[in-house]
Length: 270
Image 1 (spheres, helix red, strand yellow):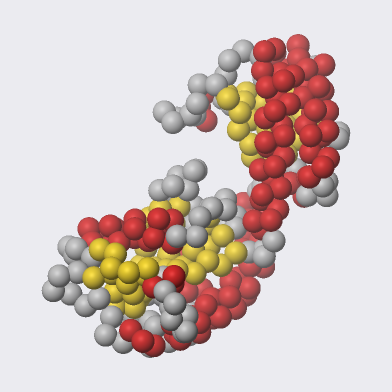
Image 2 (spheres, rainbow, N blue to C red; image 1 turned 45 degrees about the vertical axis):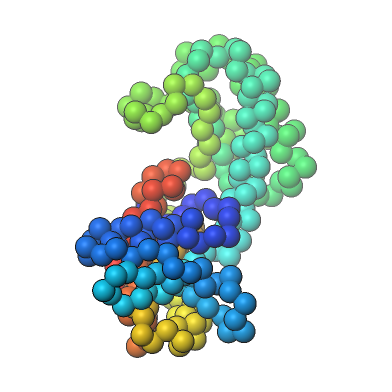
């Protein structure tokens, strides 16, 4: 997936992924690093890395984790996306749930138009959509899909069996944005590259300062990309081509592996 599509609550970087990184690092290199101290919550005057790890017979390790989000308002819009889904879920349960066979359904919506509607309008939009489906229920039950133009372009469908796996719910509702062609993703990646490179340079400069007190440690920067990207090789290329301060020993890229983004794999880039 290469990028985190959804926001992750919580301020503790150790519990948000660095514990998993330590486990993967230990497994890869046959080490036994464990958390020694959360440095970023210390009361030192200078800014600190996230954590200090120690292992018997090895150099201590400090880790800094930085997230680059593109575009900058990506998570603000994505939260609005989830607000709509919460509203639609309520309308779905109230107006449609009892009229449909128990199954797995999906609502896909045009995000660009959704974002033009304030949060206060979402309940009304959701109710209009569910009532439209209910008024055309006979057609939907035959075709298992319905396209809606107003109040907002969207598509409601039964998810086909070939798109499910063992983890799919037997009943429920899923949300997705409008389908985009690979060419659109590529164009967005090209537009994002200079911004990502600029943000990476800024984070590298800040990380260099944080590592100054830890010259006797292995110093690792972990990069997380937030947004909607399909081309991991382009992200890796940006990192490889960056001007990396000599004090930074290694750079790793976080890669969410599952739809819920709870499974994260870390790949060393530098």
